[in-house]
Amino acid sequence: MKREVLEFHTACAPLLEPVERLARMRVGFVDETIAQYLNDVQDHLLKVVSDVHRFREILSNAMELHLSSTSARLNQTLSQLTVIASLFLPLTFLSGFFGMNFGWLVDHIGSFWTFATAVFVMAITVLIQLIIFRRRGLLG
Image 1 (cartoon, rainbow, N blue to C red):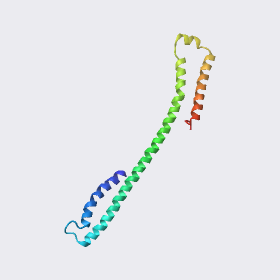
Image 2: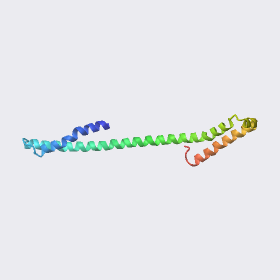
Image 3: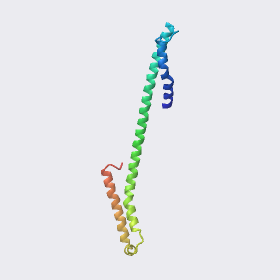
Image 4: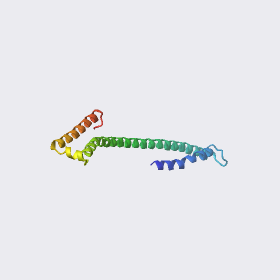
């Protein structure tokens, strides 16, 4: 639509000056009745050009509104992805640390209670993060 309005403007705007010159009888061979007719044509042409300018402004505002709404949705999506990534960061660190195959770690991390403690620490970490995110308004 914006392109069509622009094409219409490029077709109408250049006609303003020649029609005005003819309507004011600045060019020879223009009869009085034709000059009156051209005066009406000039008035209509001025209205059309002003309407085209108004339509261009309305279309620009609609495009800005669309881009603004798209940007708001993108910001909301990125916020949700940031929360998810933040939740998995300490889990990844802890599981990566305890998943290393160093001799000392393998010898000392072998019981069920050590595993349960690690899972409990991971769960508490996620719970604390969820509480902080909810207080800051990042969740829902």
